[in-house]
Image (cartoon, rainbow, N blue to C red; front, side, top):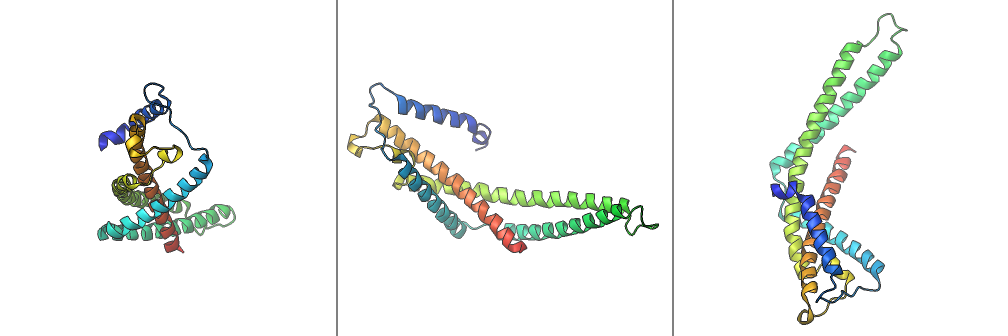
Length: 215
């Protein structure tokens, strides 16, 4: 998994090159017959993947929930981050007032050095808490992607496809080598799209939940 993470671009180039070879090969394999309504298929494909991705996100949340300890840690971190931001805003206002009235008042109400020190402390604390939230979310997103990829493989094998939707595929008994290879790549490609899409939907739901909690 670590090797794939570091050399994902190499795998992507290999996949794209092989796919171009399959689509453009003029040898013993006949040319692929494309559908005459690609835009209609593209719209339906987008809606299909969006719905399946949303359902996968809910399925994973229901049957593969996040550990309670991580949920509590994240909730506490979000609340702490909100409090730090409130304190930082208050210090910013005090700092603005202090600079504005620095020459007007013989004894300034706020000490600039103290305010700057407090502001720096809050900024540092905010970065630490934000990194903690990102660490928790990153671990959960990684698990969601792995589960979604496995479920995406199953769904792709059962008929949810992407690439072959744009090509008129023959019956199983009449499928030639290029059709079979394309079908294989379609399963991997569809699973990867569902994995990334489900992870994106999961992250979007996190943002919505955080915004709702703040309000």
